[in-house]
Length: 146
Picture 1 (spheres, helix red, strand yellow):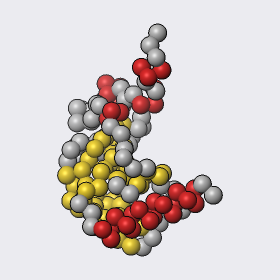
Picture 2 (cartoon, helix red, strand yellow):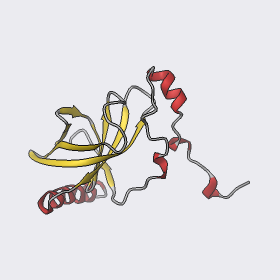
Picture 3 (cartoon, rainbow, N blue to C red):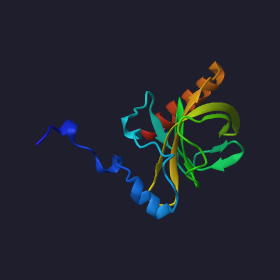
Picture 4 (cartoon, helix red, strand yellow):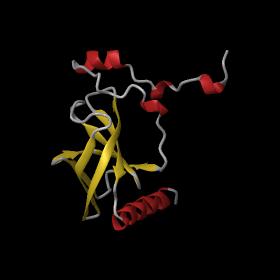
């Protein structure tokens, strides 16, 4: 038998054929190799009491998680965005402050139900915006471990 490094966690596997049966749609746009991607920054799960709202191209999305360099959102349609799409109209509202952001879609995967998980890497942030996000994430992380 191979080493532990050869084992794949079942939670990381997305069966696209099964997802296609469940959703009734062509899922060829989903990044089949998203498990090879790793984050260079920590993301915190969004919580119900967070004052966070996100819109992408004018459409509201439920927030999955947030980091200083990226967002995880839920899509209700798997074809709303595609991997490697550039997104230039992201509005992130943190505690009443609206941040105008741009990003790149780094992965899309099914959640096993009727939603799709979408990871967006934030790009071209000015220093003030980057600091606002970093401060928010650091404060949340500190509070989570107290």
